[in-house]
Image (cartoon, rainbow, N blue to C red; front, top):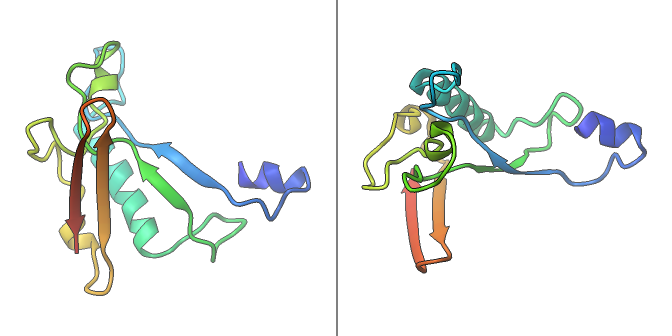
Length: 128
């Protein structure tokens, strides 16, 4: 996307990834929705963020990304994968381990925040 934007003459435009993630569980026809794939995707994403890696076109420009989602949404309609994007289950237990303790450096911190507008509940989890 950054390359295409640059080719259109908007190379200095800031890009933010507003939602990215991988489902940890899916229906039988959603073969890629597995715990292993979700953990690998999010672990690699976090590793890139901690290293402040950008894209091939902007290698020294760290991307701002928002992981979808902090919590699984067990009441959400649709395919099973739609309810299983979270790093945590609704009861606040870990859905799977992305290796935050092995990824984080003493000088870095990862802050994960989730807010539910409908019930005004805000969850904040910080890893250092």
